Length: 257
Image 1 (cartoon, rainbow, N blue to C red):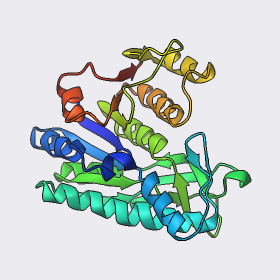
Image 2 (cartoon, one colour):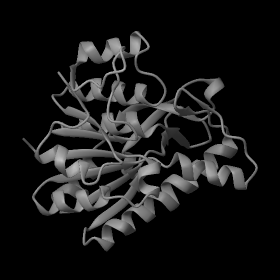
Image 3 (cartoon, rainbow, N blue to C red):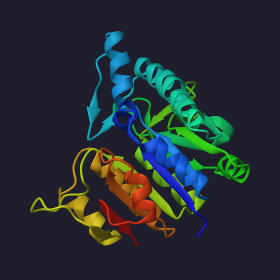
């Protein structure tokens, strides 16, 4: 066990000033190696509204024209990233904010013309994260990444959920944790599923049991499971759920090999 834990925080969690970052600090102090990946859709939408740019979201992912890309990069790689890093600093954690662009951490490829500058992860170079972890720092990662297509627009918007899954896989992390605003993955009858393997998880998507923003989380869990990482999808509204899940387990939905 390498005690590396990749934690994907949603923008709504960050906005509520909940206990998530307190849990990150506590885990760091107890010898774990957290890597924080954050979203920030609500903050991006608020800025788009201020600028009179209409957002377009399909299946939990943002269609990103060039104008929207500029807002996404400014908000996620700037405001939200630095605010999250500052909040960890206030908790006594030596954290460093970076994006997928820095040190070539994440290179992506555009998904297609209809998606604009929304893309998918093509390559991960985790060496910068390894260096930071070895030096006692907590990386705080924005999913804004490099556009590897050769387009003059060098930036790419990538959903934070697959970014978290790819980072967990590249680091061979022990755990991948997604915070969401529900108690876990719901089954076909509406019951919450406590644990699932990769085959089950793929069936959730194929059958339409999983919809919206849950789909990229489950896909990321399947990717992480390929290297032995255990994923937990848990309710970020519950106080200290991250710490409790890592140290005790049994919350939300767990997906493993």
